[in-house]
Image (cartoon, rainbow, N blue to C red; front, top):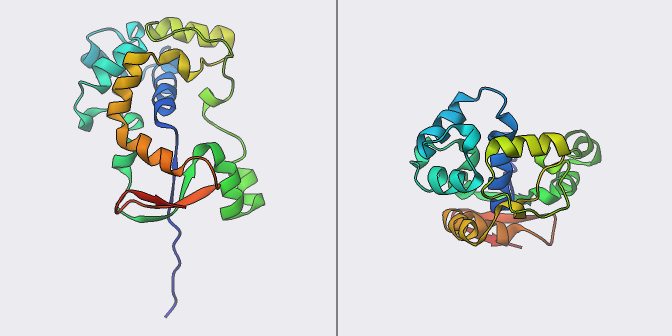
Length: 196
C-alpha cells in the first residue's frame, strides 16, 4: 500500500487592505468596462450608478447591508472560506515568495511567486489624501492619470475602520496570529488557534 502525503496551506492577507484592494481592483479599475455581476450588486445595494459609488458607500451600503450569500466572493470573510482543517502552513501574503522558497524550492518559487500580479500592489502613491468619499469614476481617473494606486490609509477614517473591524473581526484575529515572524506557521482551524 502506498502512502500519500498531503500538505495543506492557505495564504492570508491583511483584511482591511484586502477590502480596499478589492474595491480598487473589482470596482474602480473596471469602471470603464462592463462587469455586470459586481456592478449590478453595487447599484442595487447603494441605489446609485456604479460610477458615483464611494468607498464609504461600498462599505456602509454594500458590505454592511447586503446578504452575504450575494456578496462578491472577493469580499467574503476569509475565515468563513477556510475548511475546518489542520493547515500545515498559514502564509502571510507579504511573505509569500519567501514561504514558497521554503515549501517548493527556489526554482518553482521564482517562476510562480516572485512577481506580484495584483495591480494594486505594483505602484502605491506616497501622498496621503482622504479618498473615502471620492466617487469611483474620479478615483478611476486619478489612478489612470497618476499610474499609482492610493495607499489603503487614504480610504480608512474612524467610521470605516470601526465598521470593517466588526465585519472582518475573525479575519483580523486570524491574520494577527499568523502575520510576522517565521515565513509560515501552522494553523488549526478546527479550533481557530495558530501555533508557532
